[in-house]
Length: 429
Image 1: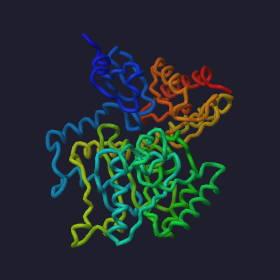
Image 2: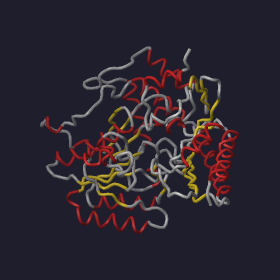
Image 3: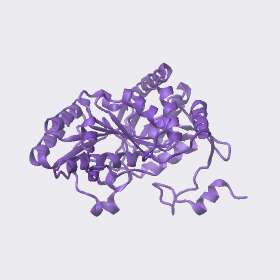
């Protein structure tokens, strides 16, 4: 009898994978807490929370109970002209955690669609006001998803190259990383001066760019950029798909800045990693611009599984867990462990940089090749980590940890040890 991995190889096309050269995938049959178990009985530490989605651990019994109960009541209903309790309750509770200017919740089904909804809200906002604003400000190397609108506002990279001629134009500005804050702000201001009346919005990943290599930047600079946008009547969109729900040490990364965005995108951790779900929130100022006797001012956007009751129930259960003091103690515990690990790593010559924000730590290795997603060291590192039964997916020569909040200190130390060994083996001083 063929293994699950062998059967997979015959019928499935995996994401971000060169299928010609890829090894057989690892077939996972069970999850529990911070662990995943494969078909051969091996146990792995999930140190990246299954693509940054899992907050509280795999197969969490409380979330499973709530989803199971909902499944026996209502699995799905069209959300145009109809509503249901989980969707209403979730919107009410999310708005209590979001910045106070956020007043409306729009549901979709993943991070890319949450961003697509935000883009269409912003562009149509100006259209409904009778203004033609088609230019966009975004950070260099940003990543906002793989649908066409999301790709357009992302940086031009290997992810977008085959489609670059099909994407709409975006003004990309440098990220105000440490030591280059003034440069980023200066270019930002000059672009607004040159194109003020044509810019629809500024979109950003707050404080940390995920796919770009966990690039972290200054909160004060971001705050100033959002302030300048407000001063010049330009909308702002915060992509909190990765950063939301405690990842950065606060409920949302935007909690680190005083000025608040007009639109916020959420996904990944919102259901605790249980199922696909997306949310886009906005201010009443944006929402009200769509209220009209003219039906052409309607937001003609939606998805078949908009506000799926099961996903709403999973999100509500995850919120219950997030609102417990114990969860925030775990977040602070992980942050403290990361900071100590950072201190240890900075003594190693093979480490070019180490940065920490909340439960995220990123280690940039010195290599003969430049820092890049396609850096050849990536596969060597990944295969080594898998052999050590630790799931880590390096972004080129950048290794990062983003664990579920339930991970134990013992397992964190195991992950740290494996990474330090890898630095010794593969790092180039």
